[in-house]
Length: 268
Image (tube, rainbow, N blue to C red; front, side, top):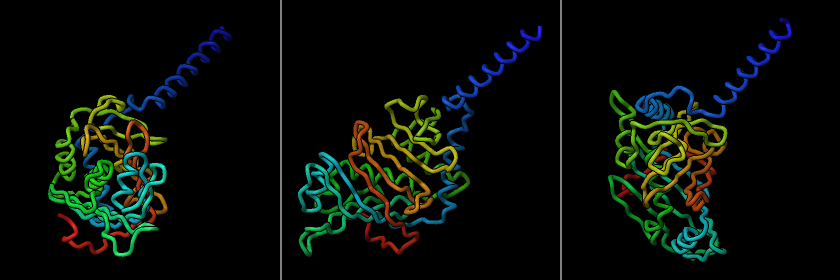
């Protein structure tokens, strides 16, 4: 009798451990907040940072076709298809962003600076930078996720409107993993579906990924490493644009200045 009870207890313990492992490995089995509540938390998190404007200094690195296009805009030649250049990203809510390439080593003195800016549904730029799809995806994705201003009784509504415009279904939701982080995935019942979706960190309530038709059929923009020494909670440690799973363009953050004076004339 005693032996049978021991075996039964061991089986119960193994079953409990297996169930716990299954829950840990399958975040989709956990409770899901309604999408409207997730977007509200996102909006509140960003508003709590009290930085409707910011200047991000860092290094922009591109590979392959994007590297050659970026080098051409900077007036230089890529090194085997790869190219890096200092850059400044300016963000001013609501929904205005600008990316400037700073003079790289070897650039001629007094050369026109390459830049691209978006605002009020318009795009402007110089030296062809506004025609580089990966740059456009980085700027639009970052501006949508970090350049909003939440107002009214429903602060998440501004995100809902922008995401719906890109085809993100706010009636579908799941949980996914980004590294060690669990995220709400809005717009897809399975996080690996090839369709518009946005990922919101389940603990930090920061946006960490946007898959949407920003400049092409389906761009993949990832905001990595919030809480880094360089960007803190204001801006991720890096922003990447991926093509077929590979990094095509990456902005590595070096310094973030909150609430600088940014002239409205810098945007279209």
